[in-house]
Image (cartoon, rainbow, N blue to C red):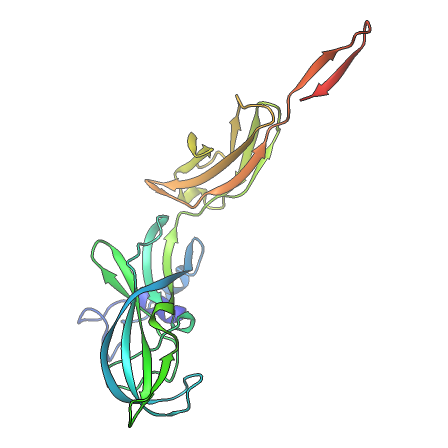
Amino acid sequence: EDVAGIIAATAKDIPPEGYDDSTGAGRINAYDALRYFEYPSSIRYYPISAIYHFNVGTYPLMLIGIEGLPDDQYRVEIHEVHSGDFSLPADILEFLGIWGLGRLTTGYSFDYEHVPKYGQGYCTVEERPGNKYRAKTFVFYVMELDDWTPIGWFPCHPNNVQFRYSVFSVNVVRPYNLRATDITETSLTLRWNHDYIDLIDGYTVKRDGQVIGNLPSSQLYWDDSGLEPGHTYHYEVLARKDDIYSAPAHLDVSTLPQYMIAQSKYPKMSASVGT
């Protein structure tokens, strides 16, 4: 499914516009297909649950290869199942494609009176208003062909359907290997790595959710000072391109506890006591 999605996303369309029975999605562009396989392009997988369904009709169908059901003709009530609307991830620089993952979705295909795809999983992703998408599949309420005796839901009840879909895109890649060095009672230095500094504008550094620095892409460190001794801080470092941000790299760091000099009651003697 991912290979088919990449081919469709990178194919050069042949008129008439869109998918054609004779040429499919168009002429395969091998250069684009291979180029988009390279990082920072990615295919990411997302789950989503069903939120509603409706009956699209009852048909006599030959069902083959459905787990827990002998191959035979049945009376089948078809229910179309939808996920809620969802948006694309916020770190996308270039959107290349989106498609459903039938093999990981609990649902079957159905084209009205055509035979289902022999119990294989099915999921398609539809465009929605407002740059939204939703996933769709079908489930079967199966009955005996002659007397309509109920047998049950296949592959599951509509409320239990779980979808999976792929997003194919070029993304703002997040920093990695975030770490702290030179830690004192009141200061520390954050350091990180990034492999694609030419593809981003820079980094945004946050401490406990607040922005404390915006840096150029070549600066892979941040000196933080004025901290409280013995306190734990949560840091995030995000790569940015224009107004698009990567997912954050996270790190919790504790400053060193403060030490004070405790004066001894004996002359010329003292003790260092940690608080």
